[in-house]
Amino acid sequence: MSRVRTLTEKLFEDKLGRVPERGEIVVVPIDLVYAHDGTFTLAFDVMKETPLLSRVFDPKRVALFIDHAAPAPTVAAALVHRAMRRFAREYGVRLFDVGTGISHQVVADEGLVKPGMFVVGADSHTVTGGAFAAFATGVGSTDAAIAMATGKLWMRVPEQVRLKLSGEAPGYIMGKDIVLTIIGMVRSDGMIYKAVEFQGEGLKTISMDSRMTISNMAVEMGAKVGLFPSDDVTREWYRVNHGTEVPVLEPDAGAEYDEELELELPRLEPVVAAPPNVDNVKPVRELEGLEVDQVFIGSCTNGRYEDYVAAARILKGRRVRDGVRCIAVPASRRVYERLLRNGIVDILVEAGCFVAFGTCGPCIGAHLGLLGEGEVAVSTTNRNFTGRMGHKESKVYLASPATAAAAAVTGRITDPREILPADARLMVVDPSYSFKP
Image (cartoon, rainbow, N blue to C red; front, side, top):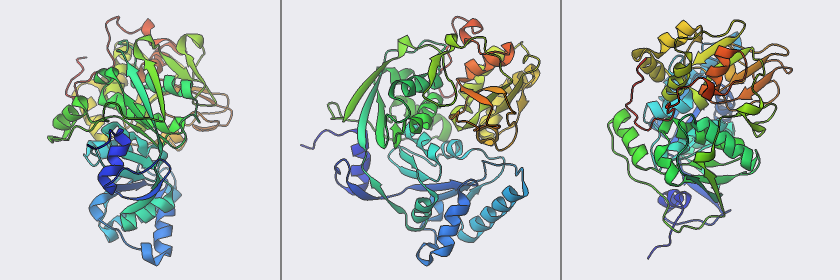
């Protein structure tokens, strides 16, 4: 009889034919490699300067994304984009050009990531793919180049942590509140190079959109990957979005972990991460009344359909407060099109939001809304480091889309429970649901 295994062990065993030991260095076949305009140049230079790497192992398993500075806000960015288009033509790889969306969202939109895959991307938030039971992790541009050329990459087998999500979260809680609470518990260095596996009965009430948010920010606690199982929620998402069946992929009962933690979802309340660190997490009620200059709702963390439905529940019939800029940037064209069909873009525009789509822009302080000296933002992004979104004297408070929208209409940090209907449920597991304005 085979030993009981964690989900991480199952993923490695599937690729290696055996269960490796923690800390062992292994070479793993890679199913998908990608890079974007912020990291492509370094990867390309490595491939160009190293004859053994001047090829692509399988064009169907390599993808490039123009998403960080898109459309090009500078001549330098335009030149990078031009080089990427030329590379894609020469090597026959897929290029997702301006207007398609942010890489970590598009790999889900296009069905490029699936349970059981090993995915590496030249971006730390590649960990988003862990929501789909894929071992998805960020690597440096040099490693990305090696993976593109060979289809393989070395990894150190991580320690494994079981994080049990128990009970059911209140209706006003979103995935962002869950993951910020976890980061506040374990701190930004608490899970360095560990595989965090999210488990427990609470999973059945957490949507795929919120799972992506949680996995996306696993790296903010230092994790190598943040894994959800492929369960009924996952499988229904693939049926609705891609018309495909994917396997159940879960840890065995009784599998041994290096560490076990638990988060009781019913006890959660809306939270924010105050500057200058993502683990400086506080209940919204402790910061209520702090005036804000800008609200950003978007990014690879919170630029999905569920996120804008939550914002629309607060913004509908209201206006963004005078003196506040509210910027909404859905993570991909596909998300934007769904928002258009369901009237949510109309709600955002009528409330006074600036709406674009498919770019990282404001999150990384590239374009579409940088902060000036002394300005304060509430943002649904993943990092609030000094100078991250603009001037080094600006401040960024990370929050859920509901909390961000509440700040937009009041002009100050506000508990969304003050505005949301009492029966609101912001995480909706059914992937086919439509918001009725």
